[in-house]
Length: 476
Length: 147
Image (cartoon, rainbow over all chains, first blue to last red; front, side, top):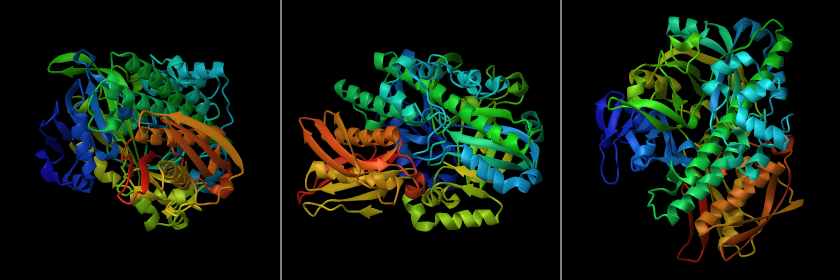
Protein backbone atom coordinates (compact mmCIF):
# COMPACT_ATOMS: atom_id res chain seq x y z
CA UNK A 1 0.00 0.00 0.00
CA UNK A 2 1.39 3.40 -0.93
CA UNK A 3 1.81 5.56 2.22
CA UNK A 4 1.13 8.58 0.01
CA UNK A 5 -2.55 7.60 0.08
CA UNK A 6 -2.58 8.70 3.76
CA UNK A 7 -1.91 11.98 5.53
CA UNK A 8 1.05 11.41 7.83
CA UNK A 9 0.35 12.54 11.41
CA UNK A 10 3.58 11.14 12.82
CA UNK A 11 5.84 8.12 12.25
CA UNK A 12 3.15 5.61 13.32
CA UNK A 13 -0.16 7.45 12.80
CA UNK A 14 -1.67 8.09 9.36
CA UNK A 15 -5.11 9.41 8.39
CA UNK A 16 -7.56 9.33 5.53
CA UNK A 17 -9.76 12.42 5.78
CA UNK A 18 -13.48 11.81 5.27
CA UNK A 19 -14.49 11.86 1.62
CA UNK A 20 -17.38 10.46 -0.36
CA UNK A 21 -19.66 8.47 1.92
CA UNK A 22 -17.18 8.39 4.84
CA UNK A 23 -18.74 9.67 8.08
CA UNK A 24 -15.44 9.77 10.00
CA UNK A 25 -11.74 9.59 9.12
CA UNK A 26 -9.80 6.34 8.88
CA UNK A 27 -6.72 6.21 11.10
CA UNK A 28 -3.99 3.63 10.68
CA UNK A 29 -1.31 3.05 13.32
CA UNK A 30 1.77 1.57 11.65
CA UNK A 31 5.20 2.60 10.46
CA UNK A 32 5.92 3.35 6.84
CA UNK A 33 7.44 -0.07 6.10
CA UNK A 34 4.45 -1.92 7.57
CA UNK A 35 2.07 0.21 5.50
CA UNK A 36 4.08 -0.45 2.33
CA UNK A 37 3.80 -4.18 2.98
CA UNK A 38 0.01 -4.07 3.41
CA UNK A 39 -2.46 -4.95 0.67
CA UNK A 40 -4.33 -2.02 -0.92
CA UNK A 41 -7.50 -3.71 0.28
CA UNK A 42 -6.69 -2.59 3.83
CA UNK A 43 -7.14 1.04 2.73
CA UNK A 44 -10.34 0.21 0.89
CA UNK A 45 -11.80 -1.76 3.81
CA UNK A 46 -10.87 0.87 6.43
CA UNK A 47 -12.57 3.52 4.27
CA UNK A 48 -15.65 1.31 3.80
CA UNK A 49 -16.02 0.82 7.58
CA UNK A 50 -15.94 4.61 7.96
CA UNK A 51 -19.17 4.80 5.93
CA UNK A 52 -21.24 2.69 8.34
CA UNK A 53 -24.09 4.36 10.28
CA UNK A 54 -23.37 5.55 13.81
CA UNK A 55 -19.59 5.10 13.69
CA UNK A 56 -17.84 7.21 16.34
CA UNK A 57 -14.55 9.14 15.98
CA UNK A 58 -12.77 7.03 13.35
CA UNK A 59 -12.33 3.71 11.60
CA UNK A 60 -9.09 2.49 13.20
CA UNK A 61 -6.51 0.09 11.80
CA UNK A 62 -3.85 -1.68 13.88
CA UNK A 63 -0.20 -2.19 12.81
CA UNK A 64 -0.71 -5.90 11.97
CA UNK A 65 -3.62 -5.21 9.63
CA UNK A 66 -4.27 -7.24 6.54
CA UNK A 67 -7.02 -7.82 3.99
CA UNK A 68 -10.05 -9.24 5.79
CA UNK A 69 -13.76 -9.55 5.09
CA UNK A 70 -15.64 -6.28 5.07
CA UNK A 71 -13.57 -5.02 7.99
CA UNK A 72 -9.82 -5.31 7.69
CA UNK A 73 -8.26 -7.85 10.06
CA UNK A 74 -6.83 -5.45 12.61
CA UNK A 75 -9.87 -3.14 12.40
CA UNK A 76 -11.46 -1.32 15.35
CA UNK A 77 -14.73 0.60 15.08
CA UNK A 78 -17.19 1.81 17.73
CA UNK A 79 -20.87 2.52 17.11
CA UNK A 80 -23.33 4.57 19.13
CA UNK A 81 -26.87 3.15 19.38
CA UNK A 82 -28.14 6.71 20.00
CA UNK A 83 -26.88 7.67 16.54
CA UNK A 84 -28.48 4.73 14.69
CA UNK A 85 -25.27 2.76 15.17
CA UNK A 86 -24.95 -0.76 13.82
CA UNK A 87 -23.65 -4.11 14.86
CA UNK A 88 -21.88 -6.10 12.15
CA UNK A 89 -21.41 -9.87 12.03
CA UNK A 90 -18.57 -9.25 9.56
CA UNK A 91 -17.01 -6.80 12.03
CA UNK A 92 -16.66 -9.60 14.56
CA UNK A 93 -15.73 -12.35 12.14
CA UNK A 94 -16.38 -16.06 11.86
CA UNK A 95 -14.24 -17.08 14.80
CA UNK A 96 -16.16 -15.22 17.49
CA UNK A 97 -13.99 -14.40 20.52
CA UNK A 98 -10.91 -16.02 19.05
CA UNK A 99 -8.24 -15.11 21.55
CA UNK A 100 -5.14 -15.91 23.52
CA UNK A 101 -4.49 -17.08 27.06
CA UNK A 102 -1.11 -17.32 28.74
CA UNK A 103 -0.45 -19.41 31.85
CA UNK A 104 2.64 -19.05 34.06
CA UNK A 105 4.35 -22.32 35.00
CA UNK A 106 7.07 -21.11 37.38
CA UNK A 107 9.35 -23.65 35.64
CA UNK A 108 12.75 -22.78 34.21
CA UNK A 109 13.75 -23.54 30.61
CA UNK A 110 16.29 -26.28 31.53
CA UNK A 111 13.54 -28.27 33.30
CA UNK A 112 11.55 -28.32 30.05
CA UNK A 113 14.60 -29.23 27.95
CA UNK A 114 15.02 -32.43 30.00
CA UNK A 115 11.60 -33.72 28.97
CA UNK A 116 10.94 -31.62 25.87
CA UNK A 117 10.31 -34.48 23.42
CA UNK A 118 8.00 -36.51 25.65
CA UNK A 119 6.20 -33.39 26.89
CA UNK A 120 5.56 -32.39 23.26
CA UNK A 121 4.23 -35.85 22.44
CA UNK A 122 1.95 -35.88 25.50
CA UNK A 123 0.52 -32.46 24.72
CA UNK A 124 -0.02 -33.48 21.09
CA UNK A 125 -1.91 -36.59 22.25
CA UNK A 126 -4.02 -34.83 24.87
CA UNK A 127 -4.96 -31.66 22.99
CA UNK A 128 -7.29 -32.55 20.11
CA UNK A 129 -6.21 -30.48 17.09
CA UNK A 130 -7.14 -30.17 13.45
CA UNK A 131 -10.20 -31.05 11.38
CA UNK A 132 -11.59 -34.47 12.22
CA UNK A 133 -10.31 -34.46 15.80
CA UNK A 134 -12.84 -35.28 18.48
CA UNK A 135 -12.93 -33.90 21.97
CA UNK A 136 -13.58 -36.16 24.92
CA UNK A 137 -16.48 -33.92 25.93
CA UNK A 138 -19.93 -34.26 24.36
CA UNK A 139 -22.62 -31.79 25.42
CA UNK A 140 -26.28 -32.75 25.74
CA UNK A 141 -28.81 -29.95 25.11
CA UNK A 142 -28.97 -29.01 28.80
CA UNK A 143 -25.19 -28.71 29.13
CA UNK A 144 -25.00 -26.81 25.83
CA UNK A 145 -27.36 -24.14 27.19
CA UNK A 146 -25.42 -23.99 30.48
CA UNK A 147 -22.10 -23.62 28.63
CA UNK A 148 -23.42 -20.87 26.33
CA UNK A 149 -24.73 -18.93 29.33
CA UNK A 150 -21.84 -19.60 31.72
CA UNK A 151 -18.62 -19.53 29.68
CA UNK A 152 -15.43 -20.28 31.58
CA UNK A 153 -17.36 -20.27 34.89
CA UNK A 154 -19.37 -23.21 33.52
CA UNK A 155 -16.13 -25.07 32.67
CA UNK A 156 -14.79 -24.44 36.18
CA UNK A 157 -18.04 -25.66 37.77
CA UNK A 158 -17.73 -28.87 35.74
CA UNK A 159 -14.17 -29.43 36.98
CA UNK A 160 -12.35 -28.31 33.82
CA UNK A 161 -10.55 -25.35 35.32
CA UNK A 162 -9.89 -23.44 38.52
CA UNK A 163 -12.03 -20.78 40.20
CA UNK A 164 -9.01 -18.47 40.66
CA UNK A 165 -8.71 -18.27 36.84
CA UNK A 166 -11.98 -16.40 36.42
CA UNK A 167 -10.84 -12.93 37.53
CA UNK A 168 -8.06 -13.14 34.94
CA UNK A 169 -10.45 -13.80 32.08
CA UNK A 170 -12.22 -10.89 30.41
CA UNK A 171 -15.75 -10.38 31.79
CA UNK A 172 -14.77 -12.52 34.79
CA UNK A 173 -15.11 -15.59 32.58
CA UNK A 174 -18.82 -15.12 31.79
CA UNK A 175 -20.07 -12.78 29.08
CA UNK A 176 -23.28 -11.17 30.27
CA UNK A 177 -26.20 -10.85 27.89
CA UNK A 178 -25.67 -14.20 26.16
CA UNK A 179 -28.89 -15.64 24.75
CA UNK A 180 -28.46 -19.36 24.02
CA UNK A 181 -31.96 -19.33 22.49
CA UNK A 182 -30.61 -17.03 19.72
CA UNK A 183 -28.05 -19.68 18.72
CA UNK A 184 -29.38 -21.97 15.99
CA UNK A 185 -29.73 -25.73 16.29
CA UNK A 186 -27.14 -26.05 13.50
CA UNK A 187 -24.60 -24.01 15.45
CA UNK A 188 -25.19 -26.07 18.57
CA UNK A 189 -24.91 -29.31 16.61
CA UNK A 190 -21.60 -28.14 15.15
CA UNK A 191 -20.29 -27.63 18.70
CA UNK A 192 -21.67 -30.76 20.36
CA UNK A 193 -18.36 -32.66 20.15
CA UNK A 194 -15.97 -29.72 19.85
CA UNK A 195 -15.41 -28.52 23.43
CA UNK A 196 -11.76 -28.77 24.40
CA UNK A 197 -10.50 -28.87 20.80
CA UNK A 198 -7.90 -26.51 19.41
CA UNK A 199 -9.09 -26.16 15.83
CA UNK A 200 -6.66 -25.54 13.00
CA UNK A 201 -5.16 -22.87 10.78
CA UNK A 202 -3.21 -20.42 12.92
CA UNK A 203 -4.47 -21.83 16.22
CA UNK A 204 -1.92 -23.38 18.55
CA UNK A 205 -0.81 -24.34 22.01
CA UNK A 206 2.77 -23.34 22.71
CA UNK A 207 5.19 -23.89 25.53
CA UNK A 208 7.28 -20.72 25.48
CA UNK A 209 10.38 -19.30 27.15
CA UNK A 210 10.47 -15.72 28.39
CA UNK A 211 13.38 -14.59 26.24
CA UNK A 212 13.55 -10.88 26.99
CA UNK A 213 12.04 -8.42 29.45
CA UNK A 214 11.42 -4.84 28.31
CA UNK A 215 9.58 -3.46 31.33
CA UNK A 216 10.81 -4.94 34.61
CA UNK A 217 8.10 -3.54 36.94
CA UNK A 218 5.28 -4.65 34.63
CA UNK A 219 6.92 -8.05 34.12
CA UNK A 220 7.12 -8.47 37.87
CA UNK A 221 3.47 -7.54 38.31
CA UNK A 222 2.60 -10.09 35.59
CA UNK A 223 4.79 -12.79 37.20
CA UNK A 224 7.11 -12.98 34.19
CA UNK A 225 10.81 -13.71 34.73
CA UNK A 226 13.49 -14.22 32.09
CA UNK A 227 14.15 -17.88 31.23
CA UNK A 228 10.98 -19.03 32.86
CA UNK A 229 8.35 -20.93 30.92
CA UNK A 230 4.76 -20.07 30.04
CA UNK A 231 2.01 -21.93 28.14
CA UNK A 232 0.03 -19.95 25.58
CA UNK A 233 -3.15 -21.10 23.83
CA UNK A 234 -4.62 -19.41 20.73
CA UNK A 235 -8.10 -20.52 19.68
CA UNK A 236 -11.72 -19.45 19.60
CA UNK A 237 -15.34 -20.52 19.60
CA UNK A 238 -14.85 -23.42 17.20
CA UNK A 239 -17.71 -24.61 14.99
CA UNK A 240 -20.36 -22.81 17.03
CA UNK A 241 -18.87 -19.38 16.39
CA UNK A 242 -18.24 -20.16 12.73
CA UNK A 243 -21.86 -21.20 12.26
CA UNK A 244 -23.26 -18.14 14.09
CA UNK A 245 -21.06 -15.92 11.91
CA UNK A 246 -22.13 -17.71 8.71
CA UNK A 247 -25.84 -17.58 9.48
CA UNK A 248 -26.02 -13.97 10.67
CA UNK A 249 -23.86 -12.74 7.82
CA UNK A 250 -26.32 -14.27 5.37
CA UNK A 251 -29.31 -12.92 7.24
CA UNK A 252 -27.81 -9.42 7.51
CA UNK A 253 -26.85 -9.37 3.79
CA UNK A 254 -30.40 -10.25 2.78
CA UNK A 255 -31.94 -7.87 5.35
CA UNK A 256 -29.72 -5.01 4.16
CA UNK A 257 -30.66 -5.68 0.52
CA UNK A 258 -34.35 -5.81 1.42
CA UNK A 259 -34.05 -2.54 3.36
CA UNK A 260 -32.32 -0.89 0.41
CA UNK A 261 -29.12 -0.19 2.36
CA UNK A 262 -26.35 0.22 -0.19
CA UNK A 263 -23.28 -1.46 1.28
CA UNK A 264 -19.94 -0.92 -0.47
CA UNK A 265 -19.14 -4.57 0.29
CA UNK A 266 -21.67 -7.29 1.13
CA UNK A 267 -19.38 -8.57 3.84
CA UNK A 268 -20.01 -5.32 5.78
CA UNK A 269 -23.57 -6.56 6.31
CA UNK A 270 -24.84 -5.08 9.53
CA UNK A 271 -28.03 -4.21 11.34
CA UNK A 272 -29.03 -1.36 13.62
CA UNK A 273 -28.10 -2.20 17.22
CA UNK A 274 -31.68 -1.32 18.10
CA UNK A 275 -33.31 -3.80 15.74
CA UNK A 276 -34.69 -7.28 16.22
CA UNK A 277 -31.91 -8.91 14.19
CA UNK A 278 -29.24 -6.71 15.79
CA UNK A 279 -30.33 -7.77 19.27
CA UNK A 280 -30.63 -11.41 18.22
CA UNK A 281 -27.08 -11.32 16.82
CA UNK A 282 -25.74 -9.74 20.01
CA UNK A 283 -27.38 -12.48 22.10
CA UNK A 284 -25.95 -15.22 19.88
CA UNK A 285 -22.52 -13.58 19.55
CA UNK A 286 -22.23 -13.24 23.34
CA UNK A 287 -23.10 -16.93 23.69
CA UNK A 288 -20.30 -17.52 21.17
CA UNK A 289 -17.95 -15.52 23.40
CA UNK A 290 -18.87 -17.80 26.30
CA UNK A 291 -18.14 -20.82 24.13
CA UNK A 292 -14.65 -19.49 23.39
CA UNK A 293 -13.99 -18.64 27.05
CA UNK A 294 -15.13 -22.12 28.11
CA UNK A 295 -13.08 -23.77 25.39
CA UNK A 296 -9.85 -22.00 26.34
CA UNK A 297 -10.48 -22.79 30.02
CA UNK A 298 -10.87 -26.50 29.17
CA UNK A 299 -7.74 -26.49 27.00
CA UNK A 300 -5.88 -24.81 29.86
CA UNK A 301 -7.10 -27.59 32.14
CA UNK A 302 -5.81 -30.25 29.70
CA UNK A 303 -2.43 -28.50 29.62
CA UNK A 304 -2.35 -28.42 33.42
CA UNK A 305 -3.07 -32.15 33.52
CA UNK A 306 -0.16 -32.92 31.20
CA UNK A 307 2.21 -30.61 33.07
CA UNK A 308 1.07 -32.20 36.35
CA UNK A 309 2.24 -35.55 35.06
CA UNK A 310 5.75 -34.28 34.24
CA UNK A 311 6.06 -31.71 37.02
CA UNK A 312 3.88 -32.69 40.00
CA UNK A 313 4.96 -29.56 41.89
CA UNK A 314 4.21 -27.14 39.06
CA UNK A 315 1.37 -24.69 39.63
CA UNK A 316 0.06 -23.29 36.34
CA UNK A 317 -1.48 -19.89 37.10
CA UNK A 318 -3.43 -17.96 34.51
CA UNK A 319 -1.79 -14.65 33.61
CA UNK A 320 -4.67 -13.50 31.41
CA UNK A 321 -7.17 -14.55 28.75
CA UNK A 322 -8.08 -11.96 26.12
CA UNK A 323 -10.14 -12.15 22.92
CA UNK A 324 -9.46 -10.37 19.64
CA UNK A 325 -12.66 -10.96 17.59
CA UNK A 326 -15.52 -9.34 19.50
CA UNK A 327 -18.12 -6.65 19.81
CA UNK A 328 -18.33 -5.35 23.40
CA UNK A 329 -20.34 -2.58 25.02
CA UNK A 330 -17.86 -0.27 26.75
CA UNK A 331 -18.03 3.21 28.24
CA UNK A 332 -15.67 5.55 26.39
CA UNK A 333 -15.02 9.26 26.65
CA UNK A 334 -15.96 11.02 23.42
CA UNK A 335 -15.70 14.82 23.28
CA UNK A 336 -15.56 14.96 27.06
CA UNK A 337 -18.69 12.85 27.58
CA UNK A 338 -18.79 9.18 28.51
CA UNK A 339 -20.92 7.13 26.15
CA UNK A 340 -21.68 3.40 25.97
CA UNK A 341 -20.33 2.31 22.61
CA UNK A 342 -20.45 -1.02 20.75
CA UNK A 343 -16.76 -1.53 20.05
CA UNK A 344 -15.96 -4.01 17.26
CA UNK A 345 -12.46 -5.45 17.39
CA UNK A 346 -11.76 -7.66 14.42
CA UNK A 347 -8.28 -9.05 14.86
CA UNK A 348 -7.53 -6.43 17.49
CA UNK A 349 -6.93 -6.87 21.22
CA UNK A 350 -8.60 -4.93 23.99
CA UNK A 351 -5.82 -3.07 25.82
CA UNK A 352 -7.09 -1.39 28.97
CA UNK A 353 -4.59 0.90 30.66
CA UNK A 354 -3.66 1.14 34.35
CA UNK A 355 -6.52 1.71 36.76
CA UNK A 356 -9.27 0.20 34.65
CA UNK A 357 -12.10 -1.00 36.88
CA UNK A 358 -12.49 -4.35 35.07
CA UNK A 359 -8.96 -5.47 35.93
CA UNK A 360 -8.29 -7.70 38.96
CA UNK A 361 -6.59 -6.02 41.92
CA UNK A 362 -3.22 -7.65 41.18
CA UNK A 363 -3.11 -6.12 37.68
CA UNK A 364 -5.01 -2.87 38.14
CA UNK A 365 -2.07 -0.62 38.91
CA UNK A 366 -0.10 -1.99 35.94
CA UNK A 367 -2.69 -2.37 33.21
CA UNK A 368 -4.14 -5.22 31.19
CA UNK A 369 -1.85 -7.89 29.73
CA UNK A 370 -2.11 -7.73 25.92
CA UNK A 371 -1.18 -11.12 24.48
CA UNK A 372 0.24 -11.06 20.95
CA UNK A 373 0.69 -14.27 18.98
CA UNK A 374 3.62 -14.31 16.60
CA UNK A 375 4.64 -17.26 14.43
CA UNK A 376 6.07 -20.69 15.18
CA UNK A 377 9.63 -19.54 14.71
CA UNK A 378 9.84 -15.90 15.64
CA UNK A 379 8.01 -15.84 18.95
CA UNK A 380 5.30 -13.82 20.64
CA UNK A 381 4.99 -10.75 22.83
CA UNK A 382 3.26 -9.73 26.00
CA UNK A 383 2.36 -6.05 26.10
CA UNK A 384 0.53 -3.95 28.66
CA UNK A 385 -2.34 -1.59 27.90
CA UNK A 386 -1.30 2.08 27.83
CA UNK A 387 -3.35 4.87 29.41
CA UNK A 388 -3.23 6.89 26.18
CA UNK A 389 -4.68 3.98 24.17
CA UNK A 390 -8.16 5.04 25.29
CA UNK A 391 -7.89 8.22 23.24
CA UNK A 392 -5.97 6.55 20.39
CA UNK A 393 -8.27 3.63 19.50
CA UNK A 394 -10.79 2.93 22.27
CA UNK A 395 -8.10 1.02 24.23
CA UNK A 396 -7.12 -1.40 21.47
CA UNK A 397 -3.88 -2.82 20.15
CA UNK A 398 -2.63 -5.30 17.56
CA UNK A 399 -3.31 -9.05 17.91
CA UNK A 400 -0.51 -10.82 16.10
CA UNK A 401 2.13 -10.60 13.45
CA UNK A 402 -0.35 -10.56 10.59
CA UNK A 403 0.28 -12.53 7.44
CA UNK A 404 2.71 -11.13 4.91
CA UNK A 405 2.09 -13.90 2.39
CA UNK A 406 -0.94 -15.97 1.40
CA UNK A 407 -1.17 -19.68 2.25
CA UNK A 408 -1.00 -20.25 -1.47
CA UNK A 409 2.34 -18.44 -1.76
CA UNK A 410 3.67 -20.04 1.44
CA UNK A 411 3.11 -23.50 -0.05
CA UNK A 412 5.21 -22.54 -3.05
CA UNK A 413 8.02 -21.24 -0.83
CA UNK A 414 8.35 -23.85 1.90
CA UNK A 415 8.16 -27.54 2.68
CA UNK A 416 6.51 -28.37 5.98
CA UNK A 417 8.94 -31.18 6.69
CA UNK A 418 11.93 -28.87 6.23
CA UNK A 419 10.41 -26.22 8.51
CA UNK A 420 9.84 -28.82 11.24
CA UNK A 421 13.49 -29.95 10.90
CA UNK A 422 14.90 -26.41 10.83
CA UNK A 423 12.91 -25.39 13.90
CA UNK A 424 13.96 -28.61 15.69
CA UNK A 425 17.58 -27.62 15.05
CA UNK A 426 16.79 -24.33 16.85
CA UNK A 427 15.31 -26.25 19.79
CA UNK A 428 11.66 -25.72 18.80
CA UNK A 429 9.53 -28.87 18.52
CA UNK A 430 6.52 -28.55 16.19
CA UNK A 431 3.77 -31.16 16.32
CA UNK A 432 1.07 -31.16 13.65
CA UNK A 433 -1.12 -33.67 11.86
CA UNK A 434 -0.27 -31.97 8.58
CA UNK A 435 3.11 -30.99 7.17
CA UNK A 436 1.27 -28.92 4.55
CA UNK A 437 -0.44 -27.06 7.40
CA UNK A 438 3.01 -26.32 8.84
CA UNK A 439 4.16 -24.91 5.48
CA UNK A 440 1.07 -22.69 5.27
CA UNK A 441 1.92 -21.31 8.72
CA UNK A 442 5.64 -20.95 7.98
CA UNK A 443 7.32 -18.26 10.10
CA UNK A 444 8.41 -16.52 6.89
CA UNK A 445 4.76 -16.13 5.80
CA UNK A 446 4.21 -13.70 8.67
CA UNK A 447 5.23 -10.10 9.14
CA UNK A 448 7.98 -9.25 11.58
CA UNK A 449 6.06 -9.34 14.86
CA UNK A 450 8.84 -7.26 16.44
CA UNK A 451 8.14 -4.42 14.00
CA UNK A 452 4.39 -4.71 14.66
CA UNK A 453 4.69 -4.42 18.45
CA UNK A 454 7.32 -1.66 18.18
CA UNK A 455 4.85 0.32 16.07
CA UNK A 456 2.04 -0.39 18.56
CA UNK A 457 4.26 0.92 21.35
CA UNK A 458 5.37 3.99 19.42
CA UNK A 459 1.75 4.75 18.57
CA UNK A 460 0.78 4.61 22.26
CA UNK A 461 -1.55 1.61 21.92
CA UNK A 462 0.34 -0.71 24.31
CA UNK A 463 3.85 -1.05 25.76
CA UNK A 464 6.19 -4.04 25.41
CA UNK A 465 6.70 -6.10 28.56
CA UNK A 466 8.25 -9.37 27.39
CA UNK A 467 9.22 -11.36 24.33
CA UNK A 468 8.51 -15.09 24.27
CA UNK A 469 10.15 -17.75 22.10
CA UNK A 470 8.58 -21.16 21.47
CA UNK A 471 9.96 -24.42 22.86
CA UNK A 472 7.04 -26.62 21.81
CA UNK A 473 4.31 -25.79 19.30
CA UNK A 474 1.19 -27.96 19.04
CA UNK A 475 -0.21 -26.68 15.78
CA UNK A 476 -3.94 -26.84 15.21
CA UNK B 1 -3.21 -25.34 -6.78
CA UNK B 2 -5.72 -26.50 -9.35
CA UNK B 3 -7.28 -29.68 -10.58
CA UNK B 4 -9.98 -31.19 -12.64
CA UNK B 5 -12.66 -33.79 -12.28
CA UNK B 6 -13.74 -36.42 -14.76
CA UNK B 7 -15.80 -33.86 -16.61
CA UNK B 8 -18.77 -34.63 -18.74
CA UNK B 9 -18.43 -31.53 -20.89
CA UNK B 10 -14.66 -31.08 -20.83
CA UNK B 11 -14.68 -27.61 -19.23
CA UNK B 12 -15.02 -28.56 -15.58
CA UNK B 13 -12.09 -27.60 -13.38
CA UNK B 14 -11.26 -25.76 -10.20
CA UNK B 15 -8.50 -23.59 -8.79
CA UNK B 16 -7.41 -21.83 -5.62
CA UNK B 17 -6.55 -18.14 -5.63
CA UNK B 18 -4.66 -16.20 -2.94
CA UNK B 19 -5.96 -14.02 -0.11
CA UNK B 20 -3.80 -12.46 2.64
CA UNK B 21 -4.92 -14.82 5.40
CA UNK B 22 -7.20 -17.33 3.73
CA UNK B 23 -7.89 -19.08 0.46
CA UNK B 24 -10.06 -18.40 -2.57
CA UNK B 25 -11.91 -21.19 -4.35
CA UNK B 26 -13.08 -21.01 -7.96
CA UNK B 27 -14.95 -23.63 -9.96
CA UNK B 28 -15.53 -23.62 -13.72
CA UNK B 29 -18.14 -25.50 -15.72
CA UNK B 30 -20.56 -25.48 -18.60
CA UNK B 31 -23.40 -24.66 -16.21
CA UNK B 32 -23.66 -22.88 -12.82
CA UNK B 33 -24.33 -26.30 -11.29
CA UNK B 34 -21.07 -27.70 -12.64
CA UNK B 35 -19.11 -24.59 -11.52
CA UNK B 36 -20.62 -24.93 -8.02
CA UNK B 37 -19.67 -28.62 -7.86
CA UNK B 38 -16.12 -27.87 -8.99
CA UNK B 39 -15.73 -25.10 -6.40
CA UNK B 40 -16.72 -27.61 -3.72
CA UNK B 41 -13.87 -29.83 -4.93
CA UNK B 42 -11.54 -26.85 -4.43
CA UNK B 43 -12.93 -26.62 -0.90
CA UNK B 44 -11.92 -30.21 -0.16
CA UNK B 45 -8.48 -29.50 -1.63
CA UNK B 46 -7.98 -26.70 0.94
CA UNK B 47 -8.08 -29.43 3.56
CA UNK B 48 -6.22 -32.32 1.98
CA UNK B 49 -4.12 -33.37 -0.99
CA UNK B 50 -4.90 -37.03 -0.27
CA UNK B 51 -7.45 -39.06 -2.14
CA UNK B 52 -10.97 -39.02 -0.72
CA UNK B 53 -13.20 -42.03 -1.41
CA UNK B 54 -16.74 -41.18 -2.59
CA UNK B 55 -18.13 -43.96 -0.39
CA UNK B 56 -21.11 -42.38 1.39
CA UNK B 57 -23.71 -39.97 0.06
CA UNK B 58 -25.07 -36.98 1.99
CA UNK B 59 -27.93 -34.82 0.70
CA UNK B 60 -28.04 -31.06 1.29
CA UNK B 61 -30.31 -28.27 0.17
CA UNK B 62 -30.24 -24.50 0.48
CA UNK B 63 -32.00 -21.45 -0.81
CA UNK B 64 -30.97 -17.84 -1.55
CA UNK B 65 -32.37 -14.83 -3.43
CA UNK B 66 -29.65 -14.77 -6.12
CA UNK B 67 -27.06 -17.06 -7.66
CA UNK B 68 -24.09 -15.51 -5.81
CA UNK B 69 -25.73 -15.76 -2.39
CA UNK B 70 -26.77 -19.31 -3.30
CA UNK B 71 -23.14 -20.16 -4.06
CA UNK B 72 -22.04 -19.04 -0.58
CA UNK B 73 -24.97 -20.93 0.97
CA UNK B 74 -23.92 -24.04 -0.97
CA UNK B 75 -20.31 -23.94 0.21
CA UNK B 76 -21.48 -23.29 3.76
CA UNK B 77 -23.79 -26.32 3.56
CA UNK B 78 -20.79 -28.43 2.53
CA UNK B 79 -18.66 -26.94 5.34
CA UNK B 80 -21.40 -27.73 7.83
CA UNK B 81 -21.56 -31.40 6.75
CA UNK B 82 -17.74 -31.64 6.88
CA UNK B 83 -17.74 -30.27 10.42
CA UNK B 84 -20.68 -32.16 11.89
CA UNK B 85 -20.10 -35.52 10.19
CA UNK B 86 -16.30 -35.17 10.32
CA UNK B 87 -16.22 -36.19 6.66
CA UNK B 88 -14.41 -35.10 3.52
CA UNK B 89 -16.18 -35.12 0.17
CA UNK B 90 -14.82 -36.05 -3.23
CA UNK B 91 -17.77 -35.87 -5.62
CA UNK B 92 -20.57 -33.35 -5.85
CA UNK B 93 -23.81 -33.27 -7.86
CA UNK B 94 -25.81 -30.04 -7.90
CA UNK B 95 -29.20 -29.09 -9.28
CA UNK B 96 -30.60 -25.57 -9.09
CA UNK B 97 -34.22 -24.62 -9.70
CA UNK B 98 -36.19 -21.55 -8.59
CA UNK B 99 -33.51 -20.27 -6.20
CA UNK B 100 -33.24 -23.62 -4.48
CA UNK B 101 -30.17 -25.83 -4.66
CA UNK B 102 -30.19 -29.57 -4.04
CA UNK B 103 -26.82 -31.26 -3.74
CA UNK B 104 -25.43 -34.72 -3.21
CA UNK B 105 -22.02 -34.97 -1.57
CA UNK B 106 -20.08 -38.22 -1.73
CA UNK B 107 -17.21 -38.82 0.63
CA UNK B 108 -15.82 -40.65 3.62
CA UNK B 109 -15.03 -40.03 7.31
CA UNK B 110 -11.82 -38.06 7.90
CA UNK B 111 -8.88 -40.31 8.60
CA UNK B 112 -6.45 -37.91 10.29
CA UNK B 113 -3.38 -40.03 9.54
CA UNK B 114 -4.22 -40.59 5.87
CA UNK B 115 -5.86 -37.26 4.97
CA UNK B 116 -3.50 -35.12 7.15
CA UNK B 117 -5.99 -32.21 7.18
CA UNK B 118 -4.02 -28.98 6.68
CA UNK B 119 -6.77 -26.73 7.96
CA UNK B 120 -10.43 -26.44 8.73
CA UNK B 121 -12.77 -24.22 6.67
CA UNK B 122 -14.74 -21.97 9.03
CA UNK B 123 -17.10 -20.41 6.52
CA UNK B 124 -17.48 -19.21 2.92
CA UNK B 125 -17.44 -15.42 2.69
CA UNK B 126 -18.90 -12.72 0.43
CA UNK B 127 -15.37 -11.49 -0.29
CA UNK B 128 -14.26 -11.84 -3.93
CA UNK B 129 -17.66 -13.45 -4.52
CA UNK B 130 -18.50 -13.80 -8.19
CA UNK B 131 -20.71 -16.14 -10.18
CA UNK B 132 -20.61 -15.28 -13.88
CA UNK B 133 -20.63 -16.58 -17.41
CA UNK B 134 -17.86 -15.48 -19.77
CA UNK B 135 -18.23 -14.56 -23.43
CA UNK B 136 -17.49 -18.14 -24.44
CA UNK B 137 -20.32 -19.43 -22.25
CA UNK B 138 -18.12 -20.84 -19.47
CA UNK B 139 -19.49 -20.40 -15.94
CA UNK B 140 -17.28 -19.63 -12.96
CA UNK B 141 -18.14 -19.44 -9.25
CA UNK B 142 -15.67 -18.02 -6.74
CA UNK B 143 -15.28 -16.63 -3.22
CA UNK B 144 -12.83 -16.51 -0.31
CA UNK B 145 -13.13 -19.22 2.35
CA UNK B 146 -12.13 -18.35 5.92
CA UNK B 147 -9.85 -21.05 7.29
